[in-house]
Image (cartoon, rainbow, N blue to C red; front, side, top):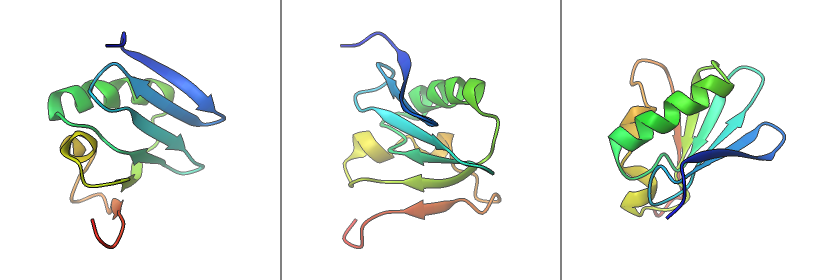
Length: 94
């Protein structure tokens, strides 16, 4: 539907479109990044991660799920490392 692109939507906030069905977002902080909705497919999420790492080489500190649909969450393993202390944030009824 869209050509793959990374769009800076606000200062230190980047959204990947066209890599997967849903958009994937990265917020760059002082000591790490937050990933919002890592996407549907691990392979596509790895491509997004590689593009995000071209913007910031800071470690992933948290992953946020806006809701439980698979197109927003199944790609998480491309960003998640169980040994890295990454926090996962979701609503209580996720």
